[in-house]
Image (cartoon, rainbow, N blue to C red):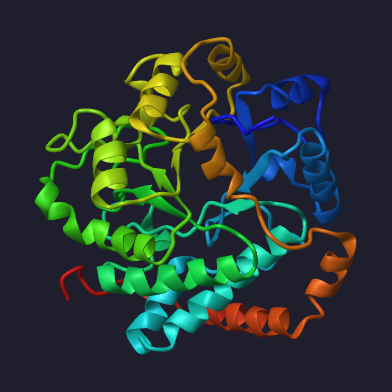
Length: 354
């Protein structure tokens, strides 16, 4: 069985019979976990093992685990700093920060890989224009070069630990006030004015970026549809102009930022036709069933292959878990993260053109 385009969630800390029925559907290819799915390391490891045992190849398992405000698993995991902490280090020493970022990325990914999680939706590559509360310190910097250096380091560390990075939120969420979880953000800049926002994508793509998440943000000077549902953004700009060959995730299609563009089946069809390989439908089981019962999406070998490449590498065994925190690399990276967590935050960073 190949991996389908639908990403779904489960409600609890173990699988119910209905969960198993959904996860065994051929159009499902991945599962996203939330804080509600986590009690402790032993419990979440068992849940991950349950999910992985259902299918061959196993379903992809993902979690939002950036650090700072967005880290679903906390107790039993190292508390990670927001990317802003690395942006501050860029201001101090732009030559050293890439290695610091690599250590953060490695620790982030290594602790998830030993329990079997394939994907952490990180790093955020949005520029911080100082207007978006939902982005804020999740962004490394206002300066595109700084974001390139920091996120390339995080990506390299994740890759070293056996995990594919996912850059988000394409083509940029940092210059809009509205939060796409609860409203539809609109960025009225012309395409030429988005060059700084696209620079990190160009840089990361040139360095082998495996996957990207598209934003529910409308850029009316480019397309009337949000980027996540836009063939212009996904197929023309991202695939053809930026030559991106990895996997494309839509942001959660249940979010308010997508709700203005039809019911869940219409949204799924738009995202799929635009070129998104993975369509998350979260916190709404009825909507998942509607999509599965529709003809909005189908199985395509090329898209399934892109997803298969996102499976994590390396051991996810009890022995690996036991050995991780005794390793010299974990101890070195944990010390780096602890120092970043203790440093006082900056209120402002430099502007994008500085």
